Image 1 (tube, rainbow, N blue to C red):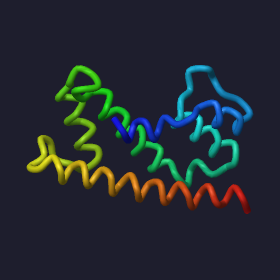
Image 2: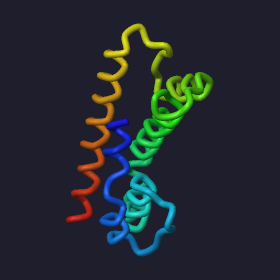
Image 3: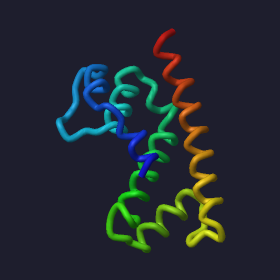
Image 4: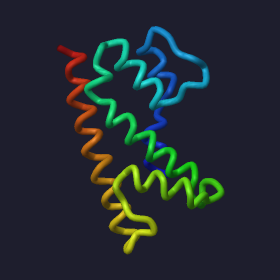
Length: 115
């Protein structure tokens, strides 16, 4: 849930950074549009898809939504993780490490915008 909140940031600020958007677009879609408009999306498509998988995982997991083990298993497999995990703490740690790495990669791409 916390990761979701980070990824669904202030959409009004993001909307000011893009030339066009649809009203139902949230954080990830707006970031994707921002990068597309600057020709940088291909460099970071894997990060965007990872973020989407994190949101999908949250959306099909208790306590945020009714649990769907089939969807959880699909997403975990796509992320290369085992479900159910031997230790939940290790799963969370792995996801947070991957999130930190993805944000670092995103930062590098954002710095190209300033060049």
